[in-house]
Amino acid sequence: MAMLTVALKTLFSLLACVMAVSLVYAFSTDYFVSCFDPKARWMQVGLLEFCIDVSLIVAWFFYKESRWILRVFFMFILFWLGSFTTCGYIVLQLFKLSTEESSKDPIYFVLVRRRKSDVIGHTWRVSVVTTRTIFIFLGCLMLGSLVFVFAIDGSPFRAEVFSPCIVPLLTDFLIMRVVIFSVWIAYKESSWINAFAWILLIICFGSMALCAYIVRELFYLSPRQPVFLILFNKSGRELMLTDPLLMENDNV
Image (cartoon, rainbow, N blue to C red; front, side, top):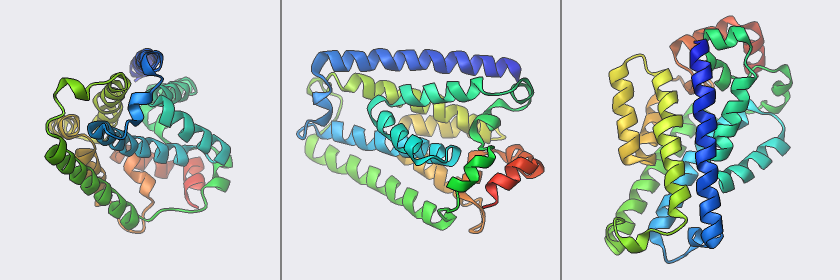
């Protein structure tokens, strides 16, 4: 497990650098103007995909951090810098792990919220049923957007669709789906076949498959359970129940 921690630190540090290079390229080329072209319908679809992906990272950050100033600041820089922000935050969490945590289950301890001070900022919860409804809606919205834009604008695989903004957008998609969400799914799934199947679906179908996976995981929870439990695999949930500090922080 200690080797896994080192590998994750190296991987996410490199990915943050890759994302930084793509952002510098897009900014130096057209100052991100092409990202907000109202005529570029496929770009708008890409931005919707990006927003759905980012919403999951924001939800995790809201669970991890209690201070609203940090939350607002994180959302702002996440929207503009994408995976550079996410990878940087993950690396920071990895460096905070103790030797024991790194050797035990580093992904669990990166995901979990453990500080007593966080209790103050987590006195409310979104219900499991509400969260299911939100992600079913987002999945349907993504499907409807794809069908609509394809019907009126044709295939996205043509030269005029590609703009400088496509470079950081595609880089962000690859980092989010091929790495960040894939690592999370591999951690959660007990079967490598199931993990590979879901990772392949998310790579191929993007946010629609990701929303479907979230909804599937939410159906494994009872309406009375907290939504944040979908972050963890079975052993992680058992570990949370045996840790007095974690139980105190999450029983709000």
